[in-house]
Image (cartoon, rainbow, N blue to C red; front, side, top):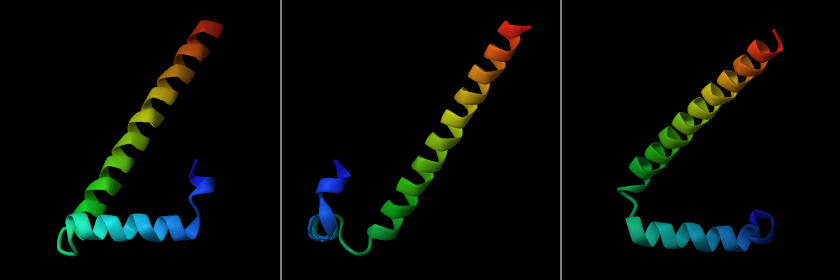
Length: 60
């Protein structure tokens, strides 16, 4: 999906986001998106570790 967007499409998306949220809210928006992605990554890592532990316990 992202392969078909291209650079011009990304520029248009960024301009639309700038118009919608304004320049004053963009840093806050970027920070909250980054924190959300970090939390999601941490939680999926925890789930994967739990699954690996379950598989190891089943083998024993």
